[in-house]
Length: 536
Image 1 (tube, rainbow, N blue to C red):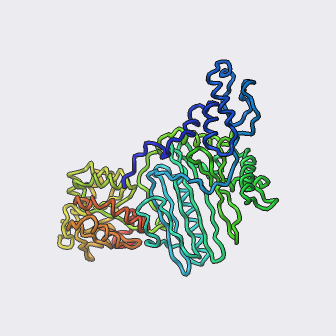
Image 2: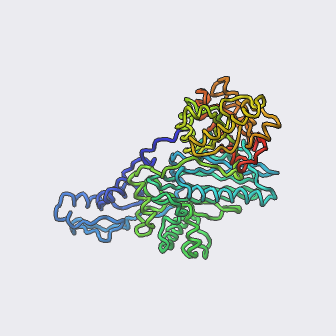
Image 3: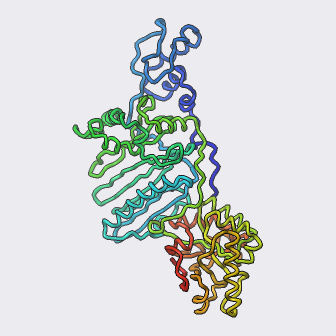
């Protein structure tokens, strides 16, 4: 559950990538071409370049190799007839889309309706809110639109497609028609640049339609657009020509009059929406083409980087260079990832009786997973550990009142009853600067007087893990996973075994399609005083 240390961009070093980042000498680029491309005829160029190394006068005349022979002077005694050395664009079904561990947070939106089903998975990288917003917007529009087209309002359900194990972008299982699935892959993570690929598959009884897009951030972590932004807008026509060349070579070119090279710029840009950078530095475009029997599919077209001189945009060039140089992934600092409970199945994790000796470790675990929670604190413990209470608030978690020293409120006289609540409010405010908006009565003990006189809404729980009995992490995970959408799980941060179980609980919840959040967000805001709540 801990966010992994990511010392590099997650890509292995290759000779071609080192060549890209190291000055691109004529000898190195020629050698790289000879290794990478099967149909090239650069053998004589490689021999010539070796000869140039040993010849000072010739070496002085060699210029940087830019992917063709123009401008590269070869002494007369080494010249020979050469064909164009540039590799061709090709349809490459064996190309492997990179998959990078960026410590992303997994999200699942799923539902089963009357004769249809939807499962959507996407990921968010903490510290990149603009990218998350765009990915979530597209995912939300897809699932809500699919349900609406079938006369249903979107209502997320947990447990539809378990098996992700808490991993971001875990594969989505194929579902029978009619269905919609949305899968994701983080394809790039270098510096503050991230690329996330979304693949939408819609199945009907008649056809399967597949569409895809890859979304990118820039060097500051700001969202810039889809794969088309890797190319200069005024060179889209050239990229479209390369797509047509590859598709024609594979016998997949669309009918005359609808080629990408003759399309308008908007169509050309849409065709490049799913573009990724491969490990060897080439670009892979998943071009949309009609599928046999109806629908559409994405055809992977490899565009050799040597064909793209002057074609890439500034962002595209920067991404390629950063990946080639293996710039370590370093996104802006991020905090808790708060879910949209109208889109995903939310529940709340709550921790009572702290702060205690294990609360700081719990905060570390929650930070690693970017999970928000609600802490019902005892005023007496806040007085003992004000710094820990402040850390809970500073991390973005929600604070609740759990009285001063945990009495049964139903047995207190009016003065003691009032003191238990008010004194705790004051102590939490002094330590954190935040005034709790809800009260959890100790033991869940309440009556009409407690509910009406507390001056705060009462929040109970729907799942009591009974973690104070210390049954073990596996049992606690099992009990927590009995929660339903909108449920509230009770744990305690004063017991070490409870804190030990939190990573497994969070992974299990996410695997089941849940998104943990705070009580107030689960309830749609802070409820009115005099009300009580056990479920969102």
